[in-house]
Structure formats: C-alpha cells, structure tokens
Length: 185
Image (cartoon, rainbow, N blue to C red; front, top):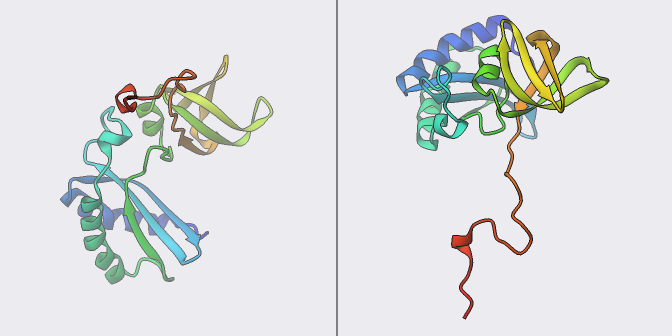
C-alpha cells in the first residue's frame, strides 16, 4: 500500500473540499490501498454538517447518486492537477457503518458505540481491544473495555473502527420480526 505524503494530503484536501461542498458533502476520510486491479484512492464523504452533529452513520450517508456526481467532478480535477505520479482508480462513497475513527471528534461523535481499537503498544497485554467509546477528555480518548476504563492519547491508537452489532438474537421459536411470520392455514 502506498502512503499519502503530507503534501499530497494537503493538495488533495484543497481539491476535494470545494467539490464536496458544492454537492452538500464533506470529506471524512482518504485512503490509498492496493487490490487486484491496482492502486485505489478511496474518498469517503458524508452529508455536510454530519461531523458537527450527533447524526447516526445512516443519517449522514450520501446516496449513490451524490457519490457519483462528486466522483464525476473530482476525477478530472485530480487528473489536471497530477497529484500522484502513479496510476490509480478513484472510488467515492460513504464511510459505512463500520467506519474508521481518525480524529478526536470522531471518538466524541460516536460516544456510546462499540469500536475495535488497534493499539501501537499494548493495553492489559492486548494489542487489539473491543471497547465502548466514552468520548474524549481533553486530548485523550476514553474507552470502556469490560469493567475497565482507559484514557489513551490519540497517538497510542494505530487504527479504530466502529463495530456493527445486529442486536440480541430472537428467543428460540420466535422470529426476529413478527410481521414477517407466515400465516399457517
């Protein structure tokens, strides 16, 4: 995987922000990765104002049409500015329900949600923990792992993602949605 240099990231932000803004969106994340088809530049966007509020990921998600419009406008801008010296495929989308957490604002916004947190060091002998987000205190991320509460500097976290939970399983003999039960004749 290729890394985006600070200069490339700054130039990328300068290109993406006005285009996203024109479509009622805001930049959430940028990722450069490799897959079978080559290098992929992924741009994650949400509805404008989502990051400042306490919107759910579903409420903040852009629809496919909005993502396609941003992609259509962003692609030529990236080509003209020759931001990268290598070939890549552009993907524009929403971050999804198991979105990455990158900033203190992300950890604060998703207070109360479960996340998988990969640490640069270890915490109670573990490099990866699944924990409930408790928000932030100053410049520290607060998490609850089982009975323990931890406060970590953002620099101690290598990566983190929200964890989607289906909720409790239905009781044996019951269906998850009684409206969908078939009538027995």
